[in-house]
Image 1 (cartoon, rainbow, N blue to C red):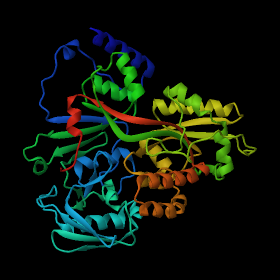
Image 2: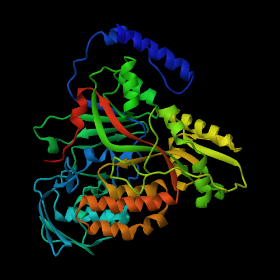
Image 3: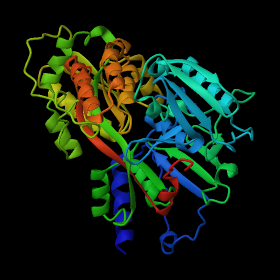
Length: 483
């Protein structure tokens, strides 16, 4: 009975809160909830905050698209539970002279079109990434790739790189090929069935599973609003919900909207809600102008009022590495004077971004700024971010807990669009690649991050660990690779 009362209260409150927004609620019947469904695990329906923008791993830049990699593709290596690289498509490997990596490719691996994978297929895939990948500069150490025979190939590096094996587990190193129509296909457990505006359908690759059970179909939807995703789960329209914070989960449990025994998976992703500076009107060209805004913003108030958590104490999430030099100190007021005190805050049109923007607006207006908030739908917003066509923006930077070097490059080149800053860090990254001990690599990384932080490219407000919630089908998506 409590569930039905909670359901009714939640729907009434949500309807009153949103009025005539685009969110549609279907008529609900008590009979729909009076008995459990007895379904086979033949389809898994998943909903996330942002839609998948591309299924080509060499073109992926956003974490929401990257999530489909494990379903569609295989990499040569995968990361184990302790962060160590383990063979996946590789049967065995060895190093010669510290910079020639010899790989033996596993037998009986097939692309989705039925063609068998061999060493030439691996070479072609890696060279495609090195030639056209958006993050090809990460692999500038690769000098050449040579096929020895159908099973063996060699990758020759320009210099020693202790991180190279783990780098081959990066999503952009997924083994792919293009068919006659230019469609990208892989060797993973699922293949693309259909890709529409609101959903992506993946179909089971029978060659991969053989006699192992697995869902026949995975459908991935997207919904920006946390409330919208919650309603879809409550109405049993989806099995799994991504991009949930622990605070939201706790609140929904307290309200009786989610059972206390709901399945929860912690992701390796950390979401940093931040204020980023764009190029529009040249207002924030100088570090002093960015520092002046940073001195005005009360991060603690924003974090407490909106997220109910402590604000960011480190520039990059402290979950990634032990941060000492890159810890955030108290910002002193500056003497910088803005000639133009009208500011525009660009946001994604969702409830959380709007709440953050309103708090920022309030704080800036206390300092005599004239502030307007401009919300955009997903495609227009992401175009603005990519072109840096904004003054200030509320933006979520997503970090992958497994890949330190990747995070650094992604943040600087994609999230901030600052290639010069990325190039300036290369000498430090080269030292990291030479270092055998993780503790020492973390110290070097901390130094690099502290140097980036001094330039104030953005203001981190809060670092949040993201989780996935769902029914019993959630475990079927916890991929461990081919082993």
